[in-house]
Image (tube, rainbow, N blue to C red; front, side, top):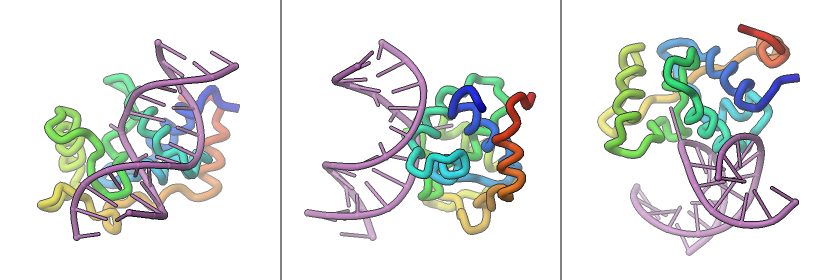
Length: 119
DNA sequence: CGTATGACGAGCC
DNA sequence: AGGCTCGCCATAC
């Protein structure tokens, strides 16, 4: 039993490997909230600076950064992803077919969500 | 306990 | 094809 959905979300996001990106909806589905994409976004926003959660690797289903245009967060997220090898096109979009995270195996996912006290 | 908000998503106009 | 609205889930006030 976990404390909150946030913890579950953070755990899954931590499993996203560098150079790969996941969508809010995908994370939501992995934690058991198929329609909780917004909740995932809420969780990302609640992440404190210095957290080990790679929030940068979470983007929307369009393959674009959800931050408001001109917002510092947008540039930061993009820079972090590009530093990992993720390429943005002229429209500022990421090719999810190439950089999209495949997700976790059912077994690994189960283990992940079962870890009540994972550091 | 009820209302409002939000780094989303899919559908409709 | 592009833009707008409604729906969903959880947190905050």
